[in-house]
Amino acid sequence: MSILLYEERDGVALLTLNRPEAMNAISSELADAMAVQLEAIAQKRDIRAVIVTGAGEKAFSAGTDLKERRGLDADGKWAQRTRGWRVNRMLHELPQPVIAAVHGWCLGGGFELALFCDLRIAAEDAVFAFPEMTLGAYPGSGAAIALPRLIGRARAKELFFTARRVAAREALLLGIVEWVVPRDALLAKAWEVTEQVKSTSPLGVSAVKRMVNEGADLEFEAASDLNDRLRRPLEATKDYAEGIQAFFERRKPIFRGE
Image (cartoon, rainbow, N blue to C red):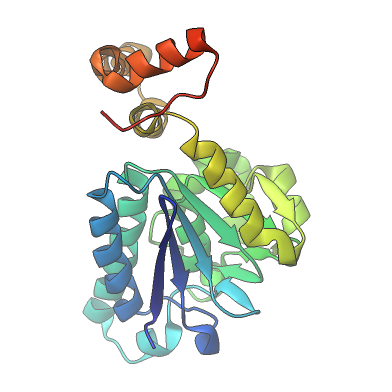
C-alpha cells in the first residue's frame, strides 16, 4: 500500500500520510512522494484546494522518521532534513490554499508540515510539540521561520525552549490553529472549509495567498509594489468580469480561473 494516499473529489485534493504503524513519521520516501504529488497539484487548474491529514487513530504525524535518521551520518541527516524542508516550501508556494486536518500527535517535523499549510483544523485530541530541543537540535524544516510569524517571537521561543506539549484548545488560543472540532468531525470540517474556498475566485485566492505570505514581512513600499503587481492583472480577467456581473444579477458567480 502507498505511504501517501491521494484522492481528488470535486476540485479538492486530499493527501493522507499513510504510515499509521509509524505514527505517520516523515521518512525520506514519504517526503519525496509528497514533493512529487505537490508538484503535480500545482499544475492542475481544476484543483481549488488541498487537505493534508494523517491515517490511523494516533497521529497526524509524529515528525521526522528517527529510526531512519539513527542510521545516517551527518550528511545523510542533512539530506533527510532537506527533503522535509522542500515539501514545506512547496506547500508555502502552492497556488492553492492548503488545509491541515490534525488529530493526535503533531510533533516536530509533523508540526512543521502543519505550520506550512495555510489553515489548520485540530481535533480535540490533537497535541502539538517540538521535541527537537530535547534531542540536541532544533526544528530545521522551517518552524523557526513560520511559528514566530504566526504567534509572535516570544511565544514561539517559549514553545521551542521548553519543548512542552500544547493541547488543541491552547493551540487555538495561541493562534496555531483556526478551529478545534470533535475527532469524528475533523474531515467534515476540512471539506466544509474547502467548499467555502471553492465559492471564491481561484485567481484571487492564489494572488492573495502570495501577497500575505510574501508581503507581510516587507517594508511598506516594497509590499505596496508587490500588491500592485499581484492585483493589477486581476482587473482584466474573465473571472473578475463574471464576479461583477453575478453581483448585479444577484446570482452566484461561476469562476473558471481565467
